[in-house]
Length: 165
Image (cartoon, rainbow, N blue to C red; front, side, top):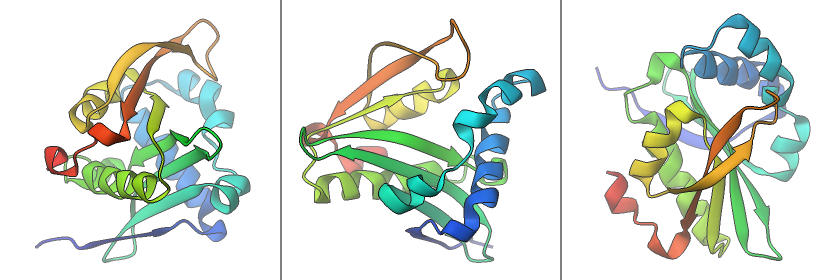
């Protein structure tokens, strides 16, 4: 049976469910409970993310939230930050991340952004590289003192949605 998905804006009444999705997705990378507790505050979905950013969910035909993605923009500099991107562990490996990413790139191009940045979880760095991002350095973790994350970037003129298929 094929699962159908639709992408739509995140809703305020989904904050708890989205936070839970983000936490379960992050923990599926092998992090222990102590690590997850240390990053819980940073990963808690905020009202402002839904109201002020482009925050999207991919919803399965049965209503389950399969994943979420959030774009923060700086219109003055015409840049964006992939600030949130998580796939529910039950949907990993089923093309959900790719579907979210394709919508993300389309939205960024519609906003006439020129450049996208992200700080990647080390386990997600290969996925983002397949999507066209290049690691350009390291950035401090917002949750774990002394930990750094891959800092990745992609000029949108080089973004090719066909390459992600």
